[in-house]
Length: 193
Image (tube, rainbow, N blue to C red; front, side, top):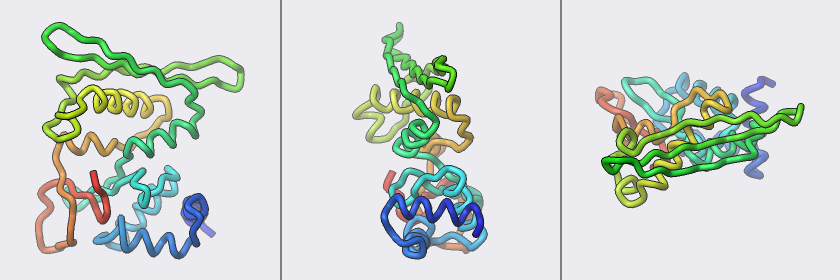
């Protein structure tokens, strides 16, 4: 049994469902419209991260014919717990000119008892997007962005966040259309972002 299959089994077990039922749900849900090769890449990302696309912890986005995995906030918090992050501190500072700085500090205690801290600032003027959540809850969204970017440093994660794709723009893929040229990002299958 391959390592990837073992990870798929583990994620299915966490959900309390049979491995084959889980794979069938993925193929008919979040992985709908993918080629067999793209599905293998997706299974590899599920294996590597241990995140569950049925819970939308990880999304699969397509641009220019290439599928890319993208981690949502719920997935990032799961990875943070696994990495031993025990401290999350978020502070906001109102800056001159109306900008807001959000600084996230994440800490994890090593086996030697020493706490290692990771910090990254984000600025509303650099992150704000023209979407409903960013218009309605700009500080909350900025806080999420700061935590996710800091977590990427602390946990050595090299997958982009779903939020970053919003900056570029994507389309939810309702039905696969191989004839149409890819002109933007698409959530494959059942994403709701």
